[in-house]
Length: 296
Image 1 (cartoon, rainbow, N blue to C red):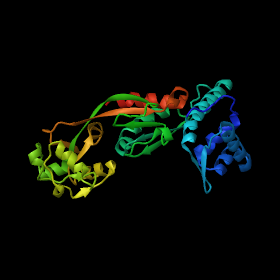
Image 2: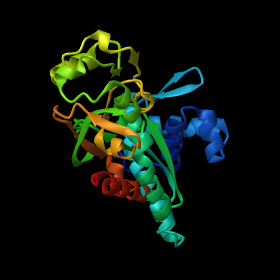
Image 3: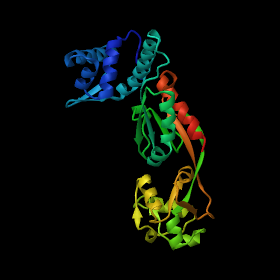
Image 4: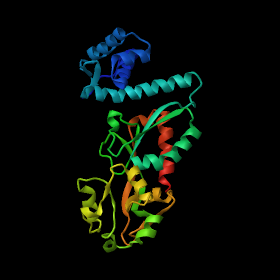
């Protein structure tokens, strides 16, 4: 659907944007310093001007319709452009400020992002970073995050994606575990040992079997869907686990095992929305992440 964006009142557009961001009229009104009836009239006015319904009223919550989601992309871009104009007008165009949310898997968020965040704090101390730690694919179109670190190629054509590199993962155990149980190097030797499972549904077991490990459920006395927790179980000597080699190199006291198996290879994608072109804060964070996640 194509919405006519010409001749829109900026106050109405800002009212829509803040209501979409906060999810309620009262919260948006407080943020903008308006009364709730005034804000409600502005939201109703932009709906009337465009001839569409932008929100579904569910109790006190304001939920975006599909048309509202379409408009949100444009409103964010216009809001960022207005913010940039204001910075230039006041001589603060180099003062990069605002919140940038980064979505990454729990292991990447815990072990690889901190170095990048240190750099962000150095180059742009005015940026507030929110880390969204999730193994699910955050939907950037719905603004669950501004930037996502992904291990699969994004399929949304309206996103900006950069393939940083191909990473690898291998199997590891703690030094204490190896001292107690020996050092298994081959797939056949693996069947006598305990592994840390990622799920009880059997998907992880099937994946390991496809990778050449003839394991059964008996090899999994422990499970954790949280990779940080699973890695800590490995580090404390409770079994063999898989981990990204970049992270393993940062972890003292662990040893690579099952070296006869080829490492698992997977891509690292950095993905954001088209606001990257207009929002300086997102560009700064994107460039820092691209630099530091490209180098293993």
